[in-house]
Image (tube, rainbow, N blue to C red; front, side, top):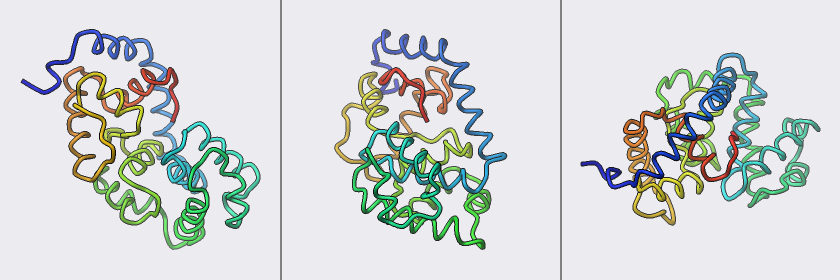
Amino acid sequence: MRYFSTITDDPIEEIKGIYSRKRGEIGLRLNEFREIWETGTKEEFFAELVFCILTPMARGKYCSIAVENMLRTGILFTGNATEIVRKLTGARFIYKKSAYIIEARERFFNDRTVSLRSIISRLEDGHRAREWLVQNVKGIGFKEASHFLRNIGFEQDLAILDRHILRSLHSIGVIEEIPGSLSRSKYLDIEKRMIEFSGAVQIPMGYLDLVLWYKETGQILK
């Protein structure tokens, strides 16, 4: 008997209902992500990486606005630390994140000998790609690396364990408590539980993440 066998019927039916109603809309969003992997430019890849660098302790909506503002003004690709900081409205730890953005830009955008797409392609497996990102990109942890790989359409079966997903997983009994912090082993343990739950309710992981996000926020965002 699995740990989620004790979940009451109502939360499961709610999740299944959202999946049924929103499946088409979620599928379109996942297809948009896949198109970035297939045809996306170096600029699009870098913009998604910056978005994920900004998301820790911040709302995704404001991070998207910050990236869009930097793209519109060209600051994302040419701005100095001060100019970038001025655009990070809604983010936290803006001076540190500005430094992370500039370092990532020098390594993965300005250096013509390095292609983030090629590196990830060679890794082939989403789990290996995530480990590489965590080890090689400052400001990127397991959640952010999983988010980035989903957003560029490379991997849809990794858990993106932000506060909304953790709260939802707790409310339906997949996890017994919401952890105060996530070590590597804790993250992987919760991800394993979420994957098993995904199989039990027959909702693919890529869909389940956005279903649970919708359940908590009423929105389907990236």
